[in-house]
Length: 571
Image (tube, rainbow, N blue to C red; front, side):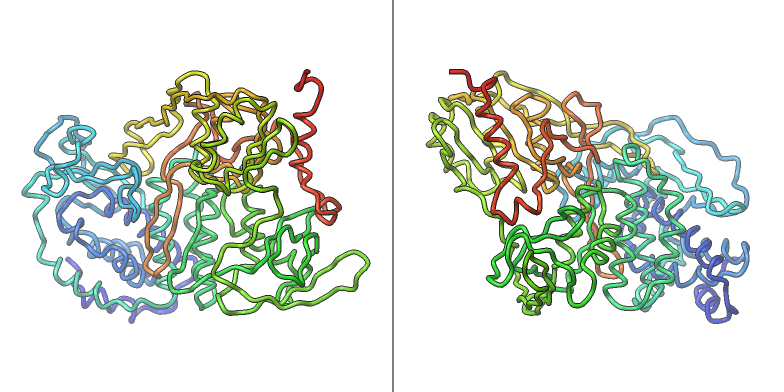
């Protein structure tokens, strides 16, 4: 007998206390089916549905199912109103996967995560729908295409991946009741936290391109992340940390959780982990000196706070350390941050600094374009535009040595200088966007992309050095990938972040926005992994506490010593 929605709604109210483990099992079963239907079931009703609110509603109903039969009934009532062909039960019918292609079918096809808020190179299309006809489908859909999903050890589901026109437009009578119930679900409490995990886990499970490189078994991370949501304290910060823990599991340096309801600023200082301690490397606050060790922040241990933030950050170890140093001094504009500082031969001091909405200050460097000594030029591609570099290109071309500084995020000069360094046109394919027609990260093919740079004159053929470190991420690593793989200079400093590729983003029911990397980036051979590894320096050197306190830039000094060496600068 089909369960009506009033009866379904009464399920939670009538249930006796449910064990926390059983609640998680129920929600996990819902999660495994939710993403398959949301992204791959091609009915018109499903395409127009409010899936974020549905996630909350589904969690609220299924948490309290007390038996496999109750769970099956609740899932059936939730998903079958979206169209024909969805089956849920201990066993499924003998229907087999189809093989014959049919150009009239309706099916979802994705170029990366096509539902991204910031589409970039990503797109989604439903074949044979007027709004999608501008898109060229990857392939003709297959008649009878299905996917079977194991929801629990004793419960399975089957979802059609292609529908005939009459099936796609069908709207079961129960759809109206479901839509009304979803629209009225309370968007508060543990149900929303659990629903956020359901939504976010599914985006990563079906569209994240880096599980091979990271070695993450995403299926095994579903229940632990639901448990984090179940046990979390109330409050916005704790809610955000539920999602941050999930994104941290993906090991994606682009991965972050933004809260549009909270204005965020930063303190007028910049920190770096030096000898295991948070150390000031730049300051716009007169009372805070470069080289000071921050011991407490608002009365809490700075090292302990940094350890927590590093665990909640996503990506490589080098990037997690940089993120942690930023997070522990982030604050709300207009507020104050109280710091305890240690500096040699001085008592520990406590200062209060104001939070601003501006970027943190930069550490002391030479002018962004400068001849440091006869024939050796310095160009900071994180601070200067290509328009400022263009007039001095002849001088750089005739120089004995050029130092390009990419300790941070580049301007247009990052890509702008590369054509003046290469000797031959290049056509490396190092960006890869997946074509996806089936769930669970099953890739049908790849769209392979590169920058296709051509050399420009005057060519800078001098001895070239590039400075970089763990702050170099994304576009910065695109540039550094060229430097390494096209052999465009000696790399000095630290390992880059190990995260590249256009980002994608989505919203969850709780109002947070989640960002992640939507494409796979490799080295220029098109195969060797780049993610997590990044670009390693040819000469590794990190700033020291003593050097910072002496006002030295030890990385730049090492670059100058390299260029002055007799082996490189012969008379």
